[in-house]
Image (cartoon, rainbow, N blue to C red; front, side, top):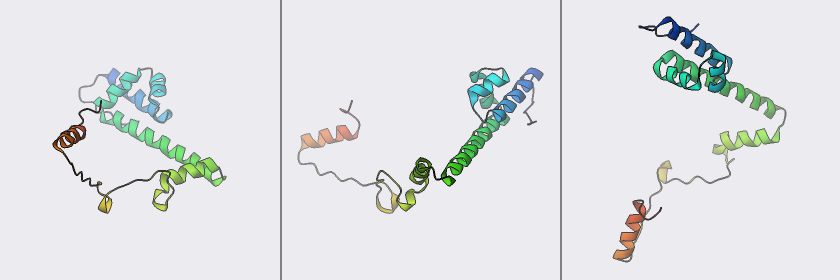
Length: 138
């Protein structure tokens, strides 16, 4: 069992935290399912995660476990030649090799794109400044 920060906690709250942690592991971090399994509400899990570092850590670990599990399933499908999975993987992980559908534009050295605006009149300058400051774009 995971250690709970017990400073001044009632036995009931300690037991609830332990049930939540156990349920999180069993449901791979799916909070609604974990809440049902632990006999608490979704809100209670969120509150306990905010209050107890051990519960917060259990939420994070369980979610990472689910990502690992899902990645494993993806790799199984890829190894069997599933075209959709292959394309998905390359689009998300192969960007550096050109597997992208959209073009990402950046400035020099990967920095922000620099813009220069030449304004021909004071009215155009005022309107341009308003747009740049978010006015008149509602």
